[in-house]
Amino acid sequence: MITQGVRVTSRCSVCGGTATCDVGQFFDNGMLCWGTEGRCADCLNGWCEEDSGPVTPENIRQALLQVHGAARLRLSGDLLSLAPVLLALRKARELSLGEARVLTTQLAETGLIGTLVEMEILAVHLRRRSVAVSVEPAT
Picture 1 (cartoon, one colour):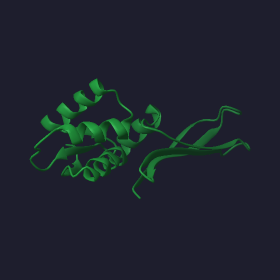
Picture 2: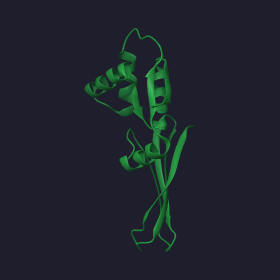
Picture 3: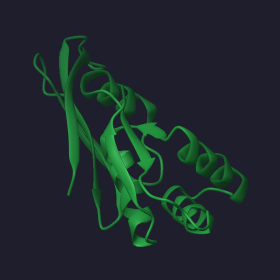
């Protein structure tokens, strides 16, 4: 399992004090998951949320990208056909055929960029279809 997390602070919605929140992404059984857990230092307000799906909420993604940087998914071998790539991306991200075509073209040309967890889960789906890929830091 690959996980990535970060701690952020914000204002408490109850008392206005300082709230500390741990946010992160992970994948479990081939599913992209994310979570937030927070607590106010000044009152008893606390929360814990976890969910899954093809897309992580943007505030969690941005916090991870800001602290850890982006990862790039690249094709690392020759392809005889783009069909396995299209199928893998459609399944992993629940995309339409047109959306999958756009991502397939981007993957073939410059690679896809996102959080480490997002790129690793796409790599798992692609490798299941015998598509050779690599994940590296995006620079």
